[in-house]
Length: 78
Image 1 (spheres, one colour):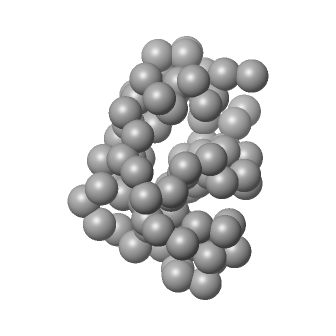
Image 2 (cartoon, helix red, strand yellow):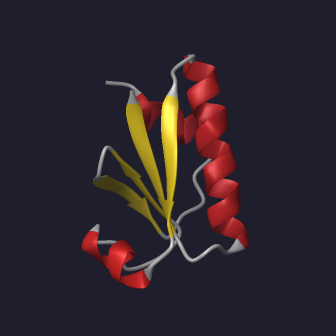
Protein backbone atom coordinates (compact mmCIF):
# COMPACT_ATOMS: atom_id res chain seq x y z
CA UNK A 1 0.00 0.00 0.00
CA UNK A 2 1.30 3.42 -0.96
CA UNK A 3 1.47 6.24 1.55
CA UNK A 4 0.70 9.78 0.41
CA UNK A 5 1.73 12.74 2.52
CA UNK A 6 -0.05 16.07 2.05
CA UNK A 7 2.33 18.79 3.22
CA UNK A 8 0.68 22.00 4.37
CA UNK A 9 -0.68 23.93 7.30
CA UNK A 10 -4.32 23.21 6.49
CA UNK A 11 -5.07 25.84 3.85
CA UNK A 12 -7.82 25.41 1.25
CA UNK A 13 -5.34 24.22 -1.39
CA UNK A 14 -3.97 21.58 0.98
CA UNK A 15 -7.48 20.27 1.62
CA UNK A 16 -8.21 20.20 -2.13
CA UNK A 17 -4.92 18.37 -2.79
CA UNK A 18 -5.90 15.70 -0.25
CA UNK A 19 -9.28 15.26 -1.96
CA UNK A 20 -7.59 15.02 -5.37
CA UNK A 21 -5.18 12.39 -4.02
CA UNK A 22 -8.11 10.31 -2.74
CA UNK A 23 -9.81 10.61 -6.14
CA UNK A 24 -6.60 9.56 -7.93
CA UNK A 25 -6.27 6.49 -5.71
CA UNK A 26 -9.89 5.60 -6.51
CA UNK A 27 -9.20 5.87 -10.25
CA UNK A 28 -6.33 3.40 -9.88
CA UNK A 29 -8.37 1.15 -7.62
CA UNK A 30 -5.54 1.20 -5.09
CA UNK A 31 -5.79 1.42 -1.37
CA UNK A 32 -3.62 4.26 -0.12
CA UNK A 33 -2.93 5.82 3.22
CA UNK A 34 -3.18 9.60 3.22
CA UNK A 35 -1.34 11.46 5.94
CA UNK A 36 -1.56 15.21 6.52
CA UNK A 37 1.71 16.75 7.62
CA UNK A 38 0.99 20.17 9.13
CA UNK A 39 4.00 21.05 11.30
CA UNK A 40 6.38 23.48 9.57
CA UNK A 41 9.47 21.63 10.81
CA UNK A 42 8.05 18.33 9.54
CA UNK A 43 7.17 19.87 6.16
CA UNK A 44 10.72 21.21 5.74
CA UNK A 45 12.16 17.75 6.53
CA UNK A 46 10.65 16.58 3.24
CA UNK A 47 12.49 19.40 1.44
CA UNK A 48 9.24 21.26 0.79
CA UNK A 49 9.61 25.04 0.82
CA UNK A 50 6.26 25.97 -0.79
CA UNK A 51 2.94 24.43 0.17
CA UNK A 52 0.93 22.56 -0.71
CA UNK A 53 3.38 19.72 -1.10
CA UNK A 54 2.82 16.12 -2.09
CA UNK A 55 5.06 13.23 -1.10
CA UNK A 56 4.60 9.59 -2.05
CA UNK A 57 6.17 7.02 0.26
CA UNK A 58 8.20 9.81 1.87
CA UNK A 59 9.61 11.25 -1.38
CA UNK A 60 8.64 14.80 -2.32
CA UNK A 61 7.11 14.80 -5.82
CA UNK A 62 5.44 18.21 -5.97
CA UNK A 63 5.42 21.52 -4.12
CA UNK A 64 3.61 24.81 -4.54
CA UNK A 65 1.03 23.33 -6.92
CA UNK A 66 -2.52 22.10 -6.59
CA UNK A 67 -2.24 18.95 -8.67
CA UNK A 68 -5.31 17.60 -10.45
CA UNK A 69 -6.32 13.96 -9.87
CA UNK A 70 -5.04 12.99 -13.36
CA UNK A 71 -1.60 14.39 -12.52
CA UNK A 72 -1.49 12.47 -9.24
CA UNK A 73 -2.50 9.24 -11.02
CA UNK A 74 0.63 9.56 -13.19
CA UNK A 75 2.79 9.99 -10.08
CA UNK A 76 1.24 6.97 -8.36
CA UNK A 77 1.79 4.59 -11.27
CA UNK A 78 5.04 2.60 -11.04
